[in-house]
Image (cartoon, rainbow, N blue to C red; front, side):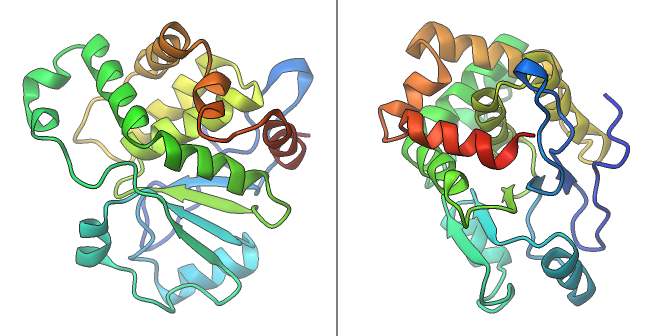
Length: 228
């Protein structure tokens, strides 16, 4: 899917892009400059940070990385301006040994299953992410992990699903990361398969997150904030 106008080019981040412009149900469209996805922001230069704060107006940073990644890479306190909320929402505390086995990722079906395990491990954190985005002060926001592919991919997919974005577009947006992060093959079908697994296991994304406190009012507020 062409992402002309959606990628934001920074010196210190390679996979930062705007989710605005994606089509949703009923003729709605995701608002521009309200929700971004990215790789880690620890490498942003002073010039990048000025753009992040002044041009994009980011108010919330939703960081999905493990504590060990933050300890190793940063950023340090004071990296973001005082008005920016930096919320740590690690989907897991450590990478399971079985996830490191190549055989665990051998097929698209297995890759979708691994992503479901990511979600199940971090479902409470993902619910909090949705709730935070639904708050009046929640956006503009950026969701990120270390490379902006797997954890960011599943988190963004759940948000876009709640917004009613077409699943084909959710998958295509996920696969766009392969243009900038090339060491791991990406398939749009993997994300649509994941959303199908959620349906078959939990009934829907909304049902999964409802178990962790996401109410219909949060989803309605999320849509009001992010759709036009």
